[in-house]
Length: 72
Image 1 (tube, rainbow, N blue to C red):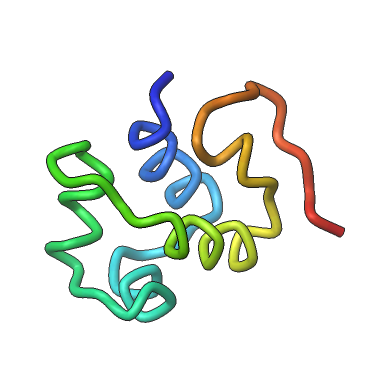
Image 2 (cartoon, rainbow, N blue to C red; image 1 turned 90 degrees about the horizontal axis):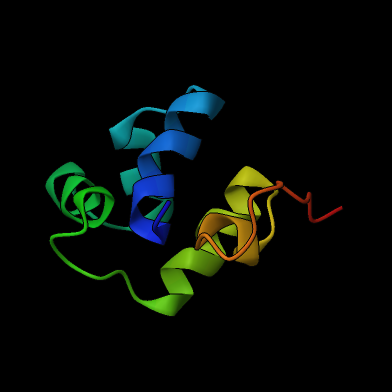
């Protein structure tokens, strides 16, 4: 699974709405959808914000590993 494919999967597993993630990332819901579809690449600092929000490691979020690791 590619990193961008995990973005929507993780968000839905956590039960977060597009608008909640848009607020966390200081973006619009349209922009979040574009990142989740792979249409546009998300900047690194946005991944860091997601890792903190989801309490998951960056390597899991971007698809480098398949087992989620918590930050704490």
